Image (tube, rainbow, N blue to C red):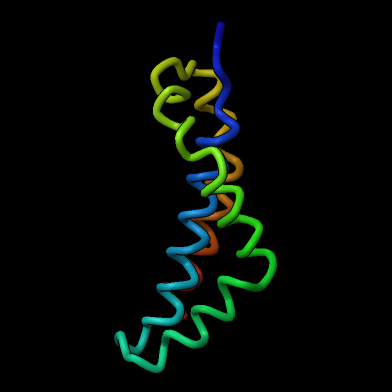
Length: 93
């Protein structure tokens, strides 16, 4: 029986959203003054929920990936496209 990919999806989306936020904050270089806005954004919605979802259940990801089917892998694509779009926009700004 397939395990599902819920935790894998949440982890991928959460970490891509985190990368997008960090790319936006670091676009002018990494500085000590970046830490305060990063902390505020990590504690604000919707990033906070995405990161909590990514963290909770992360231990399930390896076992989910061991039995991922093609159909399950295809269901990851829409969420990843949205998250990657945010990342691309953050890098462009």
